[in-house]
Length: 234
View 1 (cartoon, rainbow, N blue to C red):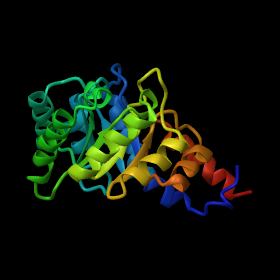
View 2 (cartoon, one colour):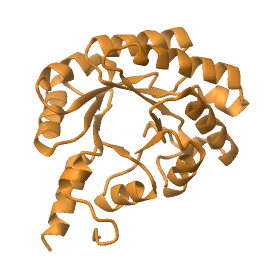
View 3 (tube, helix red, strand yellow):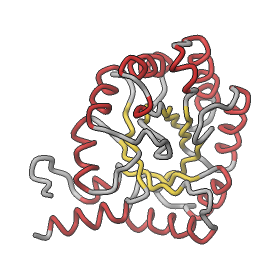
């Protein structure tokens, strides 16, 4: 792999990465290690389960690394009231960004009213904060048809969310693809795109950025940056 086709420094790539640990078995020490790595490598954000948001915020006090909390992971099937409460709790315990799984049943059914009202309810919480909290909506793109991807992206774009995110990384259908990134970018021109799920190499990360993603969600951030640094020394 070379980065001749897509020029980016290791620091620039690190600044696009959400350093992620969402394992149910993650321990306190592993979360602390995640935060140490994020500070050392200059990652944009650490992304953790609600259980660990307060700890991550404490560990990252004074650092330039943001804290991301997840809502309704991995299924997206919680009620609007629960999603709003989860988002509010994440924010009040230190989250600067919220990654919310969209209601996949509403996407599959083409239920504009339900999907739109739920996204707007969570976005209202994020926008009421000072400074405002970034909202990323996860559509689990690998599990959707092309029409369903377009539908969900148009709804999210119309609501004004900050990011549309490909995947939780936990669905058996798979994670981010170049084709989905391009489709999402085209369908939701007012939103940024976060690629997540299965991104483990520098080559994959660079390809996602080249396709139009602005953020990379991965648990392999350290490996990716070390790989890119090694390539740049050749």
